[in-house]
Image (tube, rainbow, N blue to C red; front, side, top):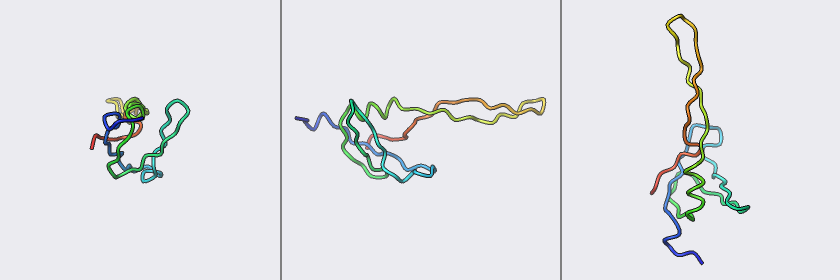
Length: 84
């Protein structure tokens, strides 16, 4: 059985994405948990660890001195959240 110390209180942030208000599905060892956005919730530690390791790549448009443009990749959190 899980003790309170096995859970962490987090807040999954809403985003500007199309699904930015939808709950986030997080899977650990074949089990999936849907975590609501925008409200503090207690989540088992392994699911928080998955969130901590999630990332995505976005591309910044850089204007070069010669007038050309370049897309530079940058890693950002896949699912933004904070401890609540």
